[in-house]
Length: 283
Ligand SMILES: NC(=O)c1ccc[n+]([C@@H]2O[C@H](COP(=O)([O-])OP(=O)(O)OC[C@H]3O[C@@H](n4cnc5c(N)ncnc54)[C@H](OP(=O)(O)O)[C@@H]3O)[C@@H](O)[C@H]2O)c1
Image (cartoon, rainbow, N blue to C red; front, side, top):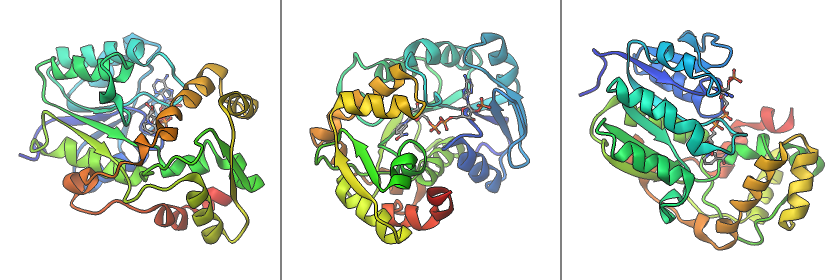
């Protein structure tokens, strides 16, 4: 079943890192997409709809005529469970299939807020797919862009490796999960093709950009002041610092075949990410 003859697909965060390539991928498959953001502007020709996690009155209209939804919480929010559960409930009440963007490692402990949202979806009775992406390669032109500019990316990763995943592969995985029922009822851990430490990753960036970019291992407190100084809210900076613990432990190094299972294609490397994002990395 492809669902094409059915209703619309609601994409939350449709102008964001994953949402934008996801809208493009779904339109390319011939799907009808409703692109949600606070502005409600159309995206790539898809109709826009106003949706705000802070305003439950926007949930119903956004879900109107929708039979599948991509639910993700935009970056910057700490209260994951409190914000996500009401949206999940609104989708479940309408019998909407949910593809949920969770986080890598959420299954490690049922006390993790993202895992609690996963459990609520698993128990809801609607068809669902859970996607757990590892750290995005794209963080190098978002969170770590100032570091790339200055030639030194400083994070509390020690020498831990990460199997960075390209947001285009997260989006392609999401598009597959939304447009077939073959993957329903399952969770997928989305990774890139190899585990790299930040020395490896910055060396790759330096090679592609033709300028020095190095890695400096720092501790949590130095990291929080650095990113808070760059404009990230302090509570979110602390959350980011906390999720480097699994990186230092080596748990983020795991490589899975889940992107290929979902999309039929091998995931992109950090080098491919860098080559295709030179403009964003040097803007
Ligand atoms: N970065 C990583 O390495 C990584 C790795 C794994 C998982 N994740 C998870 O991925 C998620 C973030 O995904 P992303 O980077 O694709 O998102 P993102 O780019 O941060 O999301 C931005 C989008 O959300 C919309 N938005 C912002 N505030 C909103 C609000 N209050 N209500 C509704 N929409 C809002 C924005 O449009 P408007 O501004 O117009 O509203 C925009 O469309 C997080 O849950 C994070 O935990 C991230």
